[in-house]
Length: 181
Picture 1 (cartoon, rainbow, N blue to C red):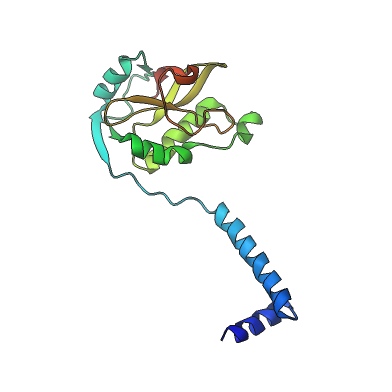
Picture 2 (picture 1 turned 30 degrees about the horizontal axis):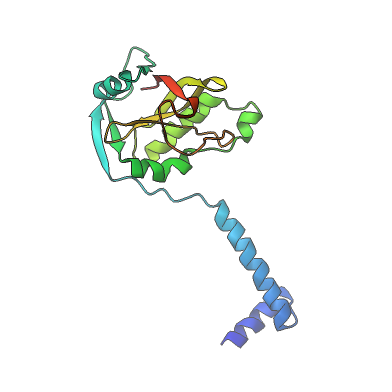
């Protein structure tokens, strides 16, 4: 059976012998691996969730000096929190390539909003755009709270040294003072 497979593949790709056919198979496998890398990561929603009211969420953030960006109308009535382990699992998927930032197509707030939007696909609505100071100046990034009410920040732009990992407020000089809630 394997011999007939080699024969059929050989005819299809014009390979004359087994060695040439093995080369064709290697190229096909390599191309398949490259295509697999281009496929989006399947979204596995977080199921370890608890809910908190917007008011309670803002009370916890206020304890560390973070105020809401307020449009006069609350955006959400309640937000879903999850464990630090689940936040760590989804963190890499909240990061975007830096090329558009470098080209000045998107700025830091766009990256923070994108992280907020992507987190919602995992059913975690407590990941929000945060604004505040960092070593290079005023900046936008992502802010969240876990189920234990620990507050974290994440740099969603892969061009920054600390991208893709949740850190405690103040770590590495990041100190948010506003949140988009």
